[in-house]
Image 1 (cartoon, rainbow over the protein chains, first blue to last red):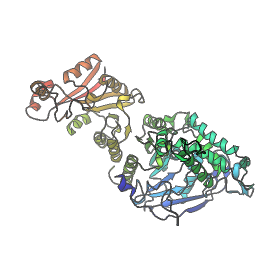
Image 2 (image 1 turned 60 degrees about the vertical axis):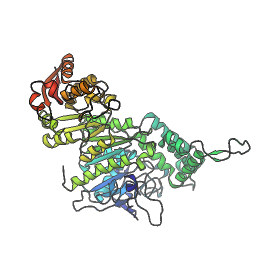
Image 3 (image 1 turned 30 degrees about the vertical axis):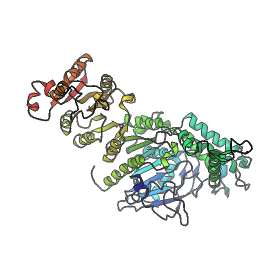
Image 4 (image 1 turned 180 degrees about the horizontal axis):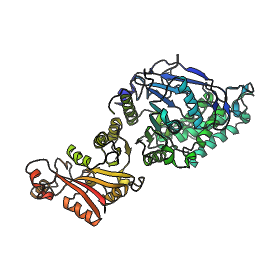
Length: 387
Length: 197
């Protein structure tokens, strides 16, 4: 089954689109963005009733390029395994919208954009963001695309937080929320890892209090270090053991003259860190990790998740991964229990995996079955099929 | 086994909230959803069954019954159902208590070990019965408690559980005719509708 599904066709060459949203966006912090730019991709066709839209919500470091290939590019989008024709999120059945959110650094309005008031880049002065701001901006994109109601909103990690926030803020605009490897709020340990990452960035002399762009610098070392810390927390001990063990890349621990010695895992992590710091913006990283820390689904509902979810009207699918310790299965169970107590329709499954938090991005037959089975039923319902 | 759903469905009220412990592929909940418009949830640990539930549009929660049901509040369901699984629980009497804590009523079905066929199997062959209903060898069976219709009723008396309805089921002649006279001898599957006294 898995070999069949992995060999399914890619959506192929895709093009990034962009839109200037000219309506003011009032952020949770009080600042109003008079206009903002969003870059996004779409896969599949919108049906005549405009009812088959699916919104994909990316996580901390994600972007709009979820599936297919950009012209001349050999690397597909970040969710290629799950998004495309005949795949779990099926572009033959759905019109899939994947947007890069504001505050990020892949073309949508963010710290690297020009602040129209000053004529300079926002940099560290970009207003602080909440998940609800992303939801609001996505709603404006939805209006622009002339879609009244999403068939489903799907997201992993911070993406799942957006899906949950949508279900409370706009209960009539979403039929299904798929919440993967997520949480109603971060634990102290999770916030701690985010702060270590931010401190790593800020400690880089090239950070220049966040004004590195104006000074033609970039805190590459700090951002790489932040990513290395994050990366370790996204994997499981077991997986790192399997992948690298104590294998050496350079040197020999028996022959004492063969210094220096480098473990495979060191080389891997350094490579990942450097690759990331070349493609991501440090201010965006700080901004979005803060957004994760601040997220608390039920804060404005008397800190009662049951009360919060009683505002939702959609069906929920909640998925966790057994070895994920950054967004542990317990967090997903809390979401599920709150939904149950609020009498909301919900299914929950804990997928056996040794791949840690990253499992939500990686191939897994059970995960694929659950997601694909759930969504093909959604597609059947849209066609007015069996209830 | 589709017949016991018939009884069960008669005892479920329209628009009620139902929890099915060990729901399998969700067939019972699906039937109750269609017939009585219930809000149903099933608990299951078998990955394939979970996938089937999800694809069938049945709410399913991956949860191991043997690890407790403490995440469910007192009286949070109208009916808690368990079909053909009580004999596989580590502590059936505690599961029963939990079912009656969570639900106002509960419905239980189980294979009656007092059925003449199983009795005869043990009596004449001298081996633990392997029947269509109890289709496992002693060493690999998930059914770790064997009990009869009479044992179950004794437990209900002991634990102050009210038997609202009972149904007995048998597949063939003459069991079908004789089960009302000697239920413990001729019942293959017992179906109970219970509440707390």
